[in-house]
Image 1 (cartoon, rainbow, N blue to C red):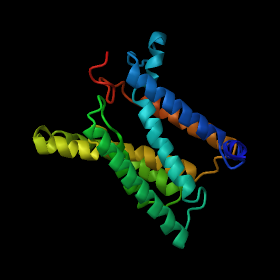
Image 2: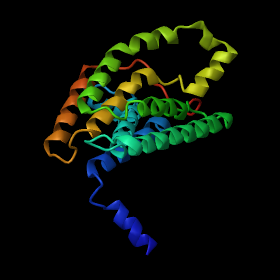
Image 3: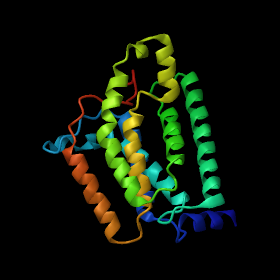
Length: 231
């Protein structure tokens, strides 16, 4: 009986296959980025194509987090009233749980940068914008994507981060990951969830937008989040 219920949940009509596929790709990409020695990705060098997992897997996770938040908070029609407050409270509880798990992993001294504290802060920020509709969220994502790198770089340059207290704060908030800039991906994911994801046109538009944005970005000069000491 329990097996039947699990199968029903897995193939429920309410599920969106493309999102499940993207989650699977994100997990595979994360494992590859952390466990394999892979060159940086370059469109012009076919032998480097496996390097697509670097950076993009974590960005995909952040975008999918926004999609999930958008779906549980009403999808195309944002929740209002008590239902909105319930969704916000649940999101904040999840943020707290994620942060605690992240801190526990830090105490275990795992040989990789822990992203969970940064995700927890992204969830807290997302809780404040749950009532917004698609257009507002997508505009906010564009603005954050354009503006956030500047304060991010300024804060990164502070000498505070080289002090023992700075190291502790950096670990506690996941500052190894540029979550100020990554909020753009969460907002974009929430905005996508506010669209009609079951429409045939919407996935194609989102895919084209993603390809255009990825093609326009500069190739990274370093990787963040790879295992340290495991080569």
